[in-house]
Amino acid sequence: MLVGKCIVVGVTGGIAAYKVPDLVSKMVGAGADVHVVMTESATAFITPLTLQTISRNPVSVRMFDPPGTWEVRHVSLADRADLVVVVPATANIIGKVSAGIADDLLSTAIMAAKAPVLFVPAMNVHMWENPILQNNIDRLRSFGYTFMEPAAGRLACGYEGRGRLPETESILELICGLFNEKKDFAGTTFLITAGPTREPIDPVRFITNRSTGKMGYGLAEAAVQRGAEVILVSGPVSIPVPGGVTLFSVETAAEMFDVVFENSHKADVIIKAAAVADYRPKHYSSSKIKKGTGDLSLEFERTTDILKYLGENKGEQVLIGFAAETDDLLKNAAAKMQKKNLDLVVANDITVPGAGFGTDTNIIKLIYRDGRIEEPERLPKRELAHLILDRIAGLTDFSIRR
Ligand code: CTP
Image 1: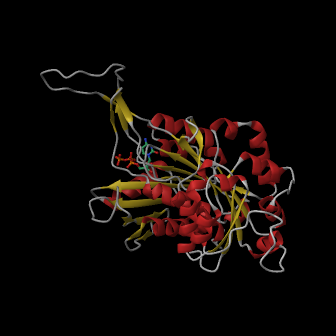
Image 2 (image 1 turned 45 degrees about the vertical axis):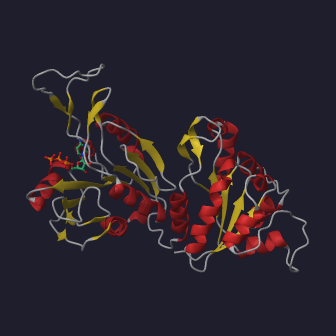
Image 3 (image 1 turned 30 degrees about the vertical axis):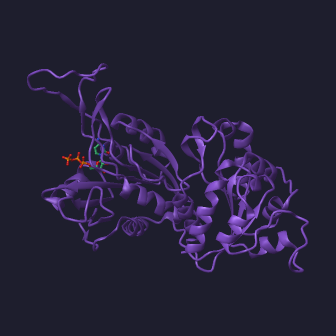
């Protein structure tokens, strides 16, 4: 996917630098010509020799080392790049570029670059949350620099929180997306829900469903690649977060409703791929329910139908629902379209092998408002995601919305 692309990888001095060889190796495997520039601090974490061997190109560190050729190194690197990726990007490099400081080879090459620049920050959670850093990021964004949101989790410094370098695959996906020529959703905002919800019974138990989030995450990734701003509202899943999305993690249908309610006004397109629980236990037991000798009955109450709410309050938005069925697929899906005031329903019969929950492929039927039904062949969920986006692009003229 990266064949013929020249990528300058700038490595700065953070512990996440140890993950860069894997990223560079995958970039090279995808066909990219990778040139690594390291700051002096980065060499305290990994050696230039490692990255030179993996990238198969000389690694540059110091500004005034005698060059192997007559070229002015920072300019030649900057000129050659189709993309500059700064990974990991420390608060220091972000601050320097934001302030216009170019005092080493990397900051100078970034300054001289005409190509897009992607920063992939990784740092301590408190540094990440520091308003000075956030201000610098906003400022750089306003100049057209791209940032990838760090992942949340346990950090090398011992803290929990946002600041981890995202998974290599997610970084790679975002890079591939930046090269994607088709930016038909630039200037539009997507709100996508994905994954299951969990409805608690007691502190140790909950009811949920088999959704893995793959279809919704595939749609989010494809929409980012095609230039959209994406707000992803996700139930608990264990797949990597696509690069470039704004993620809201939720557990219950009620939490999902709240986040969707808060953000729906920003969206041009809403895709409800989440498998939301229709019922939740009526009474939550704050202490663990102990077993008795007889049967146990639980009472359930309805959750709010988020999609129905959106359909009832719909303006110019394009609203897409999912229908996972075991019987009467087309009839049930068409009824959902009417009941929830949808523009498109993505329906699948989850009893068919290779369709539905947990699979990497899906067999779908697309049902349009005018009654048209389209039946694409079985495809990987990622390819289906682009097909669904192609159809969404055909539903309205997105250029007049920008
Ligand atoms: N959905 C939702 N909120 C809910 C339940 C479902 O937003 N509380 C959305 C799903 O995200 C999906 C669509 O509605 O896009 C279809 O969900 P489903 O539960 O299958 O549809 P229902 O109309 O509730 O019908 P039934 O449960 O009878 O199949």
